[in-house]
Length: 162
Image (cartoon, rainbow, N blue to C red; front, side, top):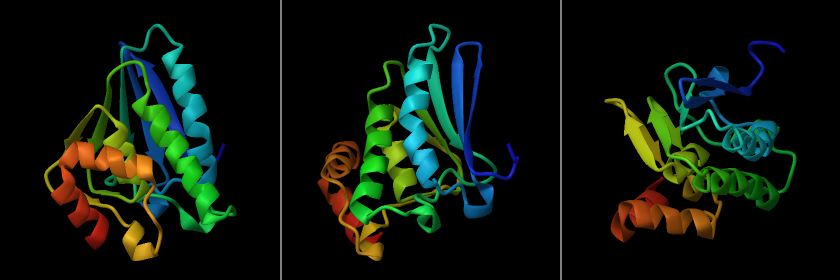
């Protein structure tokens, strides 16, 4: 596999499974293939008795810039379904999940971080929920998760302002 090809890199060491979102040329934007593969990857890690915790992070200086819209061949609704399936799989992971955030964490990246049990952000990390800027309706399950995490007022601010 070409080292520059967008992918999810997985390792397990001392009970810690690390999943790295690797598409640094596009600020770790998730391609359709990456969204599609994440639930299966999480299922395999959940079945591994050596895994005690999962850390989700991004390659380089960015966590995840959301969806790589240049790879979306589906309708916005079905592409959004892929993101929600990945988010739900992460939220249902049977062991603790942590998002290690540096740099940008926007759009679908924010959805992934919100689906983790804990989020740790480096100083200077930036969060944004961008569907309003793109004319997309944020999924209901993602909205509920966001409201539960940050409260209604902050969720509205994020959803309306991007």
